[in-house]
Image (cartoon, rainbow, N blue to C red; front, side):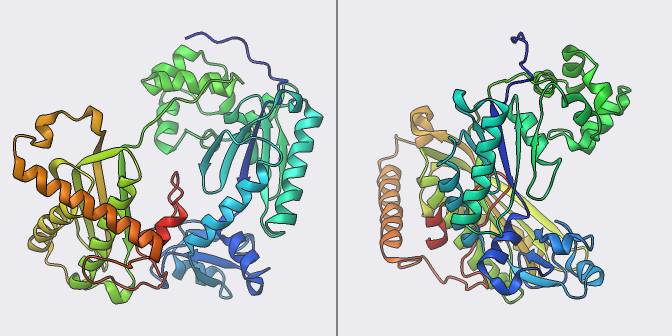
Length: 427
């Protein structure tokens, strides 16, 4: 692996990280919450945990993952706000629309992170700083004054992302030849994206306890520690080399939900599972893929609740009916295994995704005319359901009873690396 030497005085990448995004959106959208310690929760229960916290709440030690009963002990005045994923996605698109007025967006990494390769005429320190200032001002004026962001500018996207964590909230950090090593060497190993506790343990086993020590090893040594070329690529990015991102493809499509308290009986929980299945199938039909594996996982409510996880193989499919049939089979297995009194969480996943052109005819069972006729009908019915619901609103046509949730929709939520389409909230 060989790359041209890095230009550490290049200001070619800008990375934007929205600060306490969910909580900031709530404070922007609901003035009564401004200046208050708030925690965003998946449901109204002291046994759940915060999925985001405002900076006012963070001052009390509340952070993502803090149990709500502990958060209330730390801050008796805490306001718990049920998550509104549709609002967060709506604001996300407003922010993207503002950012592209000032610089092109190369990649949206998550609901609150994006990166931009600055145009050649914006790659001086002064010009890049001006772009960052205009983005901040534009978001404040055209999206909301309570939506803050930290921006990093560096020779590559990796270092620009690292820079965003060096000053929060509302920071601007520029890394270049003059300050790169001094700023990096102040960090802990786990402050670098891509080094988790397991990788830290592996580095320490190799005698590396600091960012400075890692900086001074060879790229081949880094590859050996990682056990793959990923370590070498990590080393080069840390040193300012601008490596292209590796292209990836989705490996699964799924939906999960922690159930509202009133939906935890096995009967109503299965209704939720059916809705999650149909939503996953609808998402699949917006891609070129078919799935040939269906998986169900369930967690019981209560202290020490048991877990169930099972998958089944099937002919490649993308219609509602094939996946609902698989759900029925796995649900029966789950009930026989757990016989749960209450169910806390359900996860539905569609695996082994393949484009139709890559599926061999025998897997489609083309020798069976009856099978093909049924499959064609099911595909057509599923597509018609998508079209009707898109035109007339969520569940204008549906299969079975649909449970009502406190959020108003089932399954659609923001994940770390996935931003739902707005239409998903209307399916």
